[in-house]
Amino acid sequence: MKTIANSSKDALRRHHLARRNELTDRERRERSFAICERALQVNENLDGVTACYWPIRSEVDTRPLMDAMLETGRRVALPVVLGKTELEFRAYMGAEDLIEAGFGTKGPSEAAPVIAPEILFVPLSVFDRKGNRIGYGAGHYDRAFERLEAQRNIYAIALAFACQETDHVPSEPHDRRMDLVITENEVITPEELA
Image (cartoon, rainbow, N blue to C red):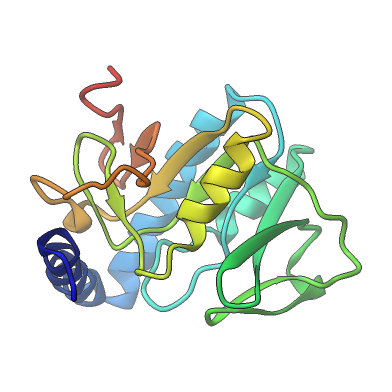
């Protein structure tokens, strides 16, 4: 039986993914580029391996960000889904070396080194100004955050279109709040972290 929080999360997810899907290809391209520019500026002030994600469906297109990071000598990783629940992060060297990586996305092959990122740019379906996010419901990033934070501090940054914002995202104890949320309009420092 679903809890009220899970039912509410499902409704928020559906609503905000529908809003994201309403963006035209041109709007998504232009807004993604603006988000990538902001994310690159933020990333320049952080140290460590940066994980990104290969965009699927109507997500923020991170390819310009990854290309720019590689050009400046940053170490970049992409997640690969292992089994049904776990993410493994592998070194990203360029789009030509990618394979199908689960959940409809692409990632480096098994030949790429496995690395533990300190900075993670993550996708989402909906967010609020407290840094709460709702993903796609499978919990891949929740488990990855927990595993990575058992080894070191990480810095989690959500990339989203402004239309994916809501007033309140119900959160549960296992939900990790984002350190920043970057949209085409602004870089949001969560209210309780500011």
